[in-house]
Amino acid sequence: MSENIAGNLHVANEVLADMVGNAAMECYGIVGMAAPSAADGIAKILPNSRLRRGVVVNTTEKGVHVDLYVVVEYGTNISTVSQNLMDQVAFALAQYAKVPLDGVDVHVQGIKVRK
Image (cartoon, rainbow, N blue to C red; front, side, top):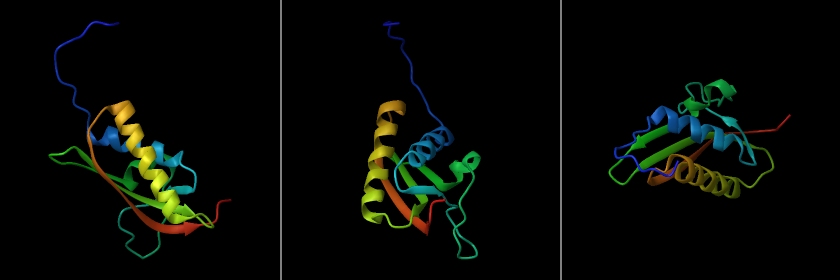
């Protein structure tokens, strides 16, 4: 289908959060997603059905800004894993959703040994 159709496409932030959560779980060194606010001070890994809770997507004038709350695998370089995660998320949003990206912030909520 090479026919152009006039109009605008709007993608909901929840859909973008699902895309980002799935991209994050494919990234090496990420054990899981965590809730943005650890009320009791302990980060709990969210089940795969609730990955969206570990992602906060905000729309700004420049594009989409993403905050990721993750649990990193013990023994990995946090800086390298975070940079890889930012690159993976930026690629997924640019390639699949074609939305402009304002930034990606990674918040490491905990470290866990992968079983």
